[in-house]
Image 1 (cartoon, rainbow, N blue to C red):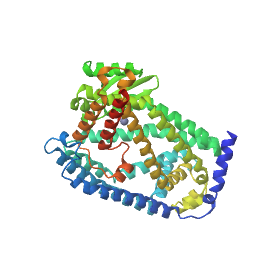
Image 2 (spheres, rainbow, N blue to C red):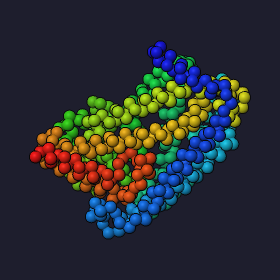
Image 3 (tube, rainbow, N blue to C red):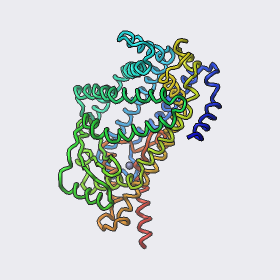
Image 4 (spheres, rainbow, N blue to C red):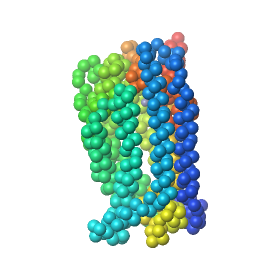
Length: 462
Ligand SMILES: [Zn+2]
């Protein structure tokens, strides 16, 4: 532990200028965030002309019924226009709030709110919770019209929306309630660790964050998801038998097999698994079951179990721990830095002893460019995992020696095409746009790879 603290001390010394130098952080954050937004807009503009193509790629052409490709192009075009507008709109709002001292104002407002309730400024944790909720609530108001438009105009126009205004409002309120109920104790514990461990907070906070993530793995699907969707056991039949047999052949610890009413809100479809290492649950969207044949859904599950077999979720979690650790290791330099708060318009009374939550929030804003790079790298890792899971499904027969699994790759390909076509997903994708935004390879890339796996398999057998 001492070695760790020595190393962390070295980093802190290198960043010592943050505590003393009057740097115009606000200006840098404005520049960073506008750069990211303009880059994202540029990506949309790169992608946009592809929505005017009149023919799908050759390999996919046979799978599009009359008029479906045109529909998917129109949907893509509408979504792109919306993305361009909402990206710039959000940036203008954020940038204005930043420029005119919204964060400093919110901290003051939280203080006044608590004073009314009879708590003084020495209740820092309580004020921090109030501060975060004022920020969260006020900054979600300007973007509310965007999500209303996206659900009831954009998705509606293309036939995907199944949400009613009542359901939409209920979801919103439930979302806020969950954020408050889970968020406040999390935040309180998070801030308490800083108070308790002082400048040696890094390992303690890491341990806390990891435990919280593990608890969420259990709580999210069992407590939170059922608030929004209904999960019912998958009825017995061909599909259930296939999945159970696949799971037992792979020694996948399947506890429950659910069907989820994804179609209640949207007709986009999917499947996933979750749970602890010894007890896993599989969830399949009702839309996927309706759209594809049982043997095709089985292939989608074979892909999902590939993720499990190669420990992809665990690996992703390990990567995110390294990411969190890096952020925390850099943070101490920003923790007691009055000039940082001054540059964001906080009054001297607050900036002289910076509240932890304020310092952390401002620090996060400074990290924006780093985060953009990290997200591209994470996409690259995730794409590699997708490729591995596809190969796993394709080569399942060689692994399990079950003759009827010979065409698993072909079935997966079919299921992917149906998913794509039914969701009207874009088939023409700009490479840079895709690298930045997509955690999955494009459909054309996946089909090509599936074909290549099959060819390699057949060569091996000869
Ligand atoms: Zn996958």
